[in-house]
Amino acid sequence: MGAFSYLSSAADKAKNGARQLGLPVARFEQFQADTLEPLFIQHAARYAIPFVRRSGVRITRLEAGRVDCRLPLKGNVNHIGTMYAGALFTLAEFPVGPLMLATYGLSRFVPIVTSVRLEFIKACKSDATVTFELPPARANEIESDTLAQGECAFTLTGDIVDAGGDVVARSHADYLMRPRRK
Amino acid sequence: MGAFSYLSSAADKAKNGARQLGLPVARFEQFQADTLEPLFIQHAARYAIPFVRRSGVRITRLEAGRVDCRLPLKGNVNHIGTMYAGALFTLAEFPVGPLMLATYGLSRFVPIVTSVRLEFIKACKSDATVTFELPPARANEIESDTLAQGECAFTLTGDIVDAGGDVVARSHADYLMRPRRK
Figure (cartoon, each protein chain N blue to C red):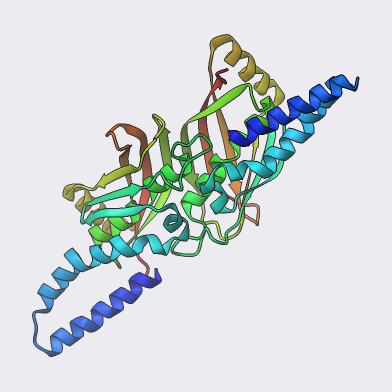
């Protein structure tokens, strides 16, 4: 992830500068992890994958343990004018990487998607949104299992909802978390 | 499907012309169903869904009971330079509609996708291809069940293969076939 390693190295320089000036490095690091990195990921992540950028998917909220995403109907219709199934898949698949980065930081873990099952429940005739959540207890469990065993399998599910609040599709995705190679 | 109804009405005009000239209409209809329609679908289908056209997916072979499709790596990479999962989903989902049209004609049935499960087996570092087949016996079964019961559930599986012949992903998709409303 070129953009993310650039951010890490810029942050390292800023921290060294703070250290030399006698500024509180720990507080800077906390601000970076809680605020700067999620904000950067929220706005930059879709540019890392041209296919995602072309779909118009946007992260509308990102913090440790939670991501909200929106997919416009415009540009993503199928031959009968409703949301194309493949666009819904992108909405279901893309947010989880940014969620993991916002939860665990940019440099510690790599999530690998091993399967995605998407149920199509009703035709989507508007923009679509999805929320994925990783509760703190489960996030800690994944972290400690990954560190102890070298990997950890986990599942995330999410409901894709239309503008009227109806569930149009449901995603069940399996991931494998691994430590990032140094 | 605007383009397809245009084709049907053009074909009707051609048949009426043939009838008036005393030409063999049955042979024309056979030629239309076996050759003209699949050729038209092969080249036109991706234009019916902008999301699919943007992915660069191409149908490379289409006939009753079989479709071959190719997805270029170019334009479809993820943040680490391998094929993006969502692009593989489009390769797995898109060909089945055209396969149904080539198998059953343009105006009789509507296939509805109810779920797709995609297993990701290894990273894809080249163009990817997939083949879906519907053997004649199974095609006939779906046809007679749809006509008798008003709908028929069926499953299609397909292996997505890289340039080296390795299976990079496997798709299991559930459909519901319904008669087209008149």
